Length: 185
Image (cartoon, rainbow, N blue to C red; front, side, top):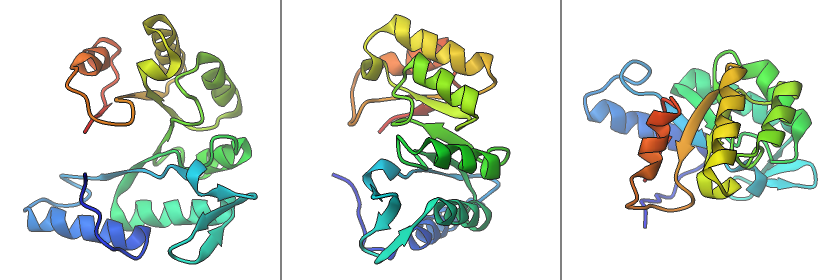
């Protein structure tokens, strides 16, 4: 289980986290910055991003405006799955608008697949890849995906697959591939 307080949207959640950072004696934006896993494919319905609890729908421009605000106001430096997995045009526009300031990580977009990553590189859609060995199926395919990203100046984030594990292999993989980042827990 996890802690799931009743909050009123992304800004409320980020503000709550910044408050906790300050109460812990750290400085937001200096000691700690935020990374979001938006899972936008789950929000995408009929060409819009639907926020049921907030009663609002955003188009691509609205989502980009939200991410700009969150990055400026709440020290968000990384956004995973910021657009839906098949919203290539949205990813391209997001990268044009925020790609020099924010790490834009494709998980559902790329599924650790070197061919999809090559398409993303050609389109300039994202600037980082989430890497999950069991998402693509083999170490060889995983290494191909990582090398493709790195050759093109993209970052990689080595990740567990939907849940915690006691297997330390992904930590070894993150070091071996020079990922610099790992997502666990």
